[in-house]
Amino acid sequence: MLIAWFLIYKQLLPFSHYFTYQILGLEQGSHLGEAVQFFIYDSPKVMMLLTLIVFGVGIIRSFFTPERTRKILAGRRESVGNVLAAHLGVVTPFCSCSAVPLFLGFVQAGVPLGVTLSFLIAAPMVNEVALVLLYGLLGWKVAALYLILGLSVAIIGGWVIGRLKLEHLIEDWVREMRSGTPLGFTVRLTWNDRIDAGRQAVKDIVAKVWPYVIAGIGAGAAIHGYVPENFMASIMGKDAWWSVPAAVVIGIPMYSNAAGIVPVIQALLGKGAALGTALAFMMSVIALSLPEMVILRKVLKPKLIAIFIGVVGTGILLVGYLFNILI
Image: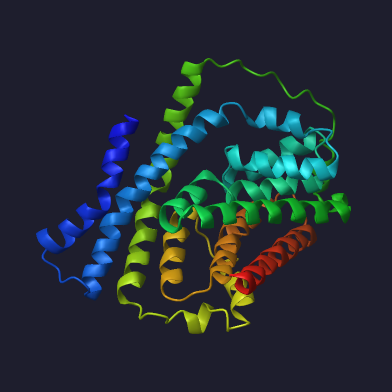
């Protein structure tokens, strides 16, 4: 199966050229031709990468259930806990709708606030969908860079919030849950169970995100084909000092997931946007989405949500400026 996957994957680029310019008869180098070729090539490429990696991560996730994650983090010192929480966030099932149940479970297990927030920052931002898309569209260096940056923002952001001692800004009914209730038991899984978990992850995640992938690649294709070269340099380039804070401010109220935003980032970079600015925009959209903040309002007081946005947003700003300077 893996050999067949690899052989098909290697033929996607020549097929996209053949289909666009030979079968459809579009002119090579034309706006429409470039947009269509981009779409025909990237759509199956990203879906194939996504399916393969989600299957593997689904197997890995079978070792890290939410219950086991809480056990690992419970009782940890904050500095060690922040690092563990951020890394566990990468491989633990998470979506915005599960933010409140996970938060309540962590509080009930006695996990410190800063450690919990490190997990909640890393889980949506540094997940397998984001990393697969970045790898497939922008290469392993950008994917590795994003992984390091995302984990750094999650670890440092959670640590800073932990140092501020803001537990009093958790809603009262949540703080009353610190009762030391047993965390339950762990079910022992066989390898067949774990392979089934990988298949289920593909079914759940790929089925959920494929429309965003196609929509994002479609938007990216339009930018790739029709936006003039270097147009984005004047808006999101290194010379525009205000571009990073503007990208973060614009990104926070937007709602998208990695599947929808990464293809757009790829196209923006191709048209002259600076890498730091583009990554800052992506991080703010994914890590500080408005729906997640609305959901977290059920368990956090407004002042803590504002501090959370401020600390994470500042970390994202620093990341953007740093990479615009270095790269």
